[in-house]
Each structure stands twice: as C-alpha cells, then as structure tokens.
Image (tube, rainbow, N blue to C red; front, top):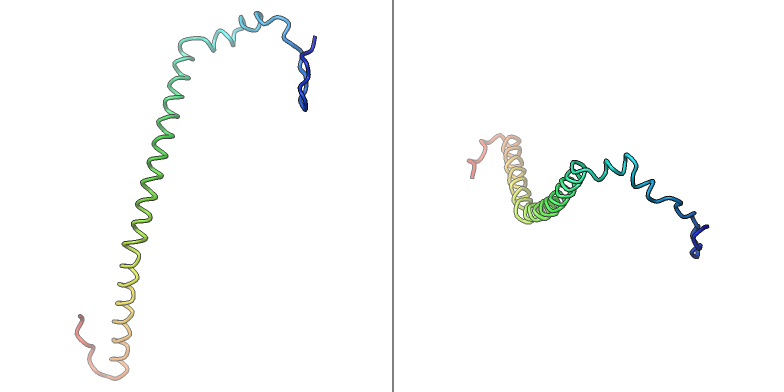
Length: 103
C-alpha cells in the first residue's frame, strides 16, 4: 500500500507498474543516443564554462588590485600636479605677470 512515513515527511503510494513507465515514449526518447550525447555535451560545456569563470574571476581580481595599487596613485599625483599648474597660472594672471615656464 503506502510506504512508511518518515518523521516530518509525507508518504507517497508506491508505483503499481514500474515497467509501464519505462516503456513510454518519453523514456525511450530520453535513452536515445542523440539525447545522451546532448546531455554529455551540455555537461561538458557547463564544466568548461565554470572553470573559465573561475579563472576569469581570478584574473579580474589580480588586474583590479594591481590597478588600484599602481595606477590610482599615479592618477592622483598627475591630478595634483595639474591643479598646482592651474593655480600658478591663475596667480600669474591676477598679478599681471607672465606665466612661469612649464616644468
């Protein structure tokens, strides 16, 4: 009749004729070579994609941290230098003298 209920679960009736389900159209189709090879190709593609995403993520992390450590301070220093040059030019214009030669 019904399988024994597990604690906290529900009991479902057992199948009456398991062979009838195995002989169905869907069962035959799912066991065909085309479907089996398609599943294998999908699994292989998923595996390669997962590995590629992991390695791409690691490379992106390395590139991002390298950029932050090496390039951002350089950009900040160049911006400060530009602001200093603009300030000197403004002061020279206010005083009416010629701008100092660029460094």
